[in-house]
Structure formats: C-alpha cells, structure tokens
Image (cartoon, rainbow, N blue to C red):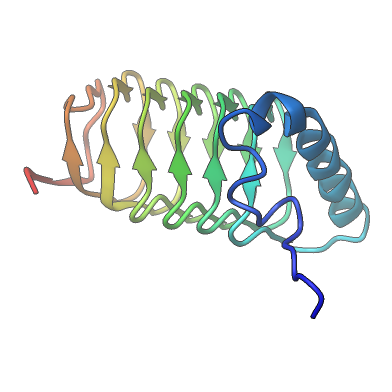
Length: 179
C-alpha cells in the first residue's frame, strides 16, 4: 500500500521544529509563485488550511478576495502598509510569530473571527473602511491598535492578556472574556 503524503502547504509538520529552517524558503517561494499565478488569472485567493513560514506582504495590493482560513503562520508575518480592496478572511488562523498590519487599509469586510494571536499583533494606524470582526479572537501577546480608524462597526469579543489600546474607538463593540 502506498503512503499518502500531504502537500507542503498542508503538512503541519513540514515547518515544525528542525524542519522550519530547512523548509521555510521553499514554502515561502512557492507560496509567492502561487499568489502571482492566482493574481495573473484574476482568481480568488483561497488558501484554506495553509501552513506558512515567516513571510512579508509589505506594501502589497490585494485586489481579489483573500481567504487564509485555518492558516497557520509559523514565523513573523507582515502585511504592513498593505491594501485590501475586497473581502478578507483569516477565520481560525493561528499566528505564532509577530504579526504586523500597521498602516494597512481594509476596504472590504474583514474577518479575524476565532483567530489566535500567540505573539504581538500590530494594527496601529490601520484603516478599517467596512465591517470588521474579531469575534472569539485570542490575543496572548502585546496588541496595538493605536491610531487605528474604524469607519464601520467593528466587533471585538475576545480573550486578551493585554487589552488593545486605541485612540479612535467609535463604532466598536467590546466584550472581554477571561475564558
């Protein structure tokens, strides 16, 4: 009987432990090529259950709908100054390294429902122009929402070890839980 193996994006062990340093470049490069292919074919970015290494999308312009649902980010992840024109979903994603969305702009609906932020999460000076949802999100590291603008209703229902700071809190619904 032949052994069934998972692709490098869905194998949760491919980037764990000693495998991380060995495989991070290959996974990162293949993911960037896949994004480029999807973009050139005007395809929705549907990356369900992907396992990704340290990766940067700094200043990236996402003009298609983006789904990184159930994704696992093992390293530092940057979307600093990125722009998102359409719907974005990180539902149930896990960020093990620091995450940086500072100065990003979300023009469409964005979902961070059930996301687990295990390290720092920077959303400072981020613009949410449509509805945002952080329902059941978990912030275990330092979080920063200073200078963030919320144009529509943003829902927060989360467990937090450090309450996010924000200088502009209009239209926010907070429920803080100590699960």
